[in-house]
Image 1 (cartoon, helix red, strand yellow):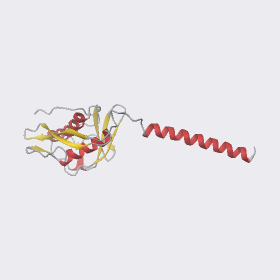
Image 2 (image 1 turned 90 degrees about the vertical axis):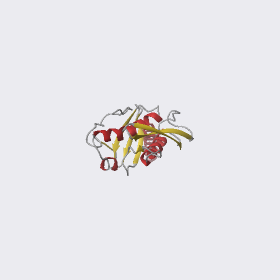
Image 3 (image 1 turned 135 degrees about the vertical axis):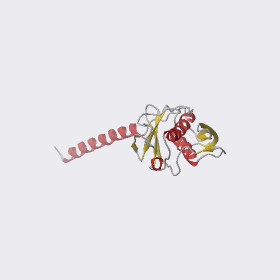
Image 4 (image 1 turned 45 degrees about the vertical axis):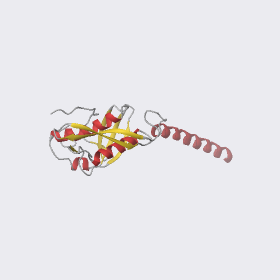
Length: 180
């Protein structure tokens, strides 16, 4: 085979590999725009669930400057939740120092919230406190984003069995009324 033919064959194979690789990467990481999950930024009214004096979850209404999609809006909501309540008589659900590292959503519309280690290390209390913390978070996400069906909690990118040693969080979580 001539050198020119060999070079042409190498070029064609390389180009085919690059195009195929691009299509695979693009289909995995860059999904088509979906209006349920991607939209124009605007002021949004949200409800953040904090703990009241009776130990039940109570919504505090706020307005936020939304982002360009659900993942960005969830980050903003969780950041507001972590900052704590503004209304008197309400108490934070998440421990101090909690940082949301990342958010992603799967094909089943389950949203994954990846937190820093502080969500485990700074968690204090028993089963009731752990339940309040979890459902403060879960109810905030599910009540504000109806296109999401459930929530999973990760810590530093890893699935964990429990946040405080009492409740199993290995399965997707759905909203819950806290009645004591």
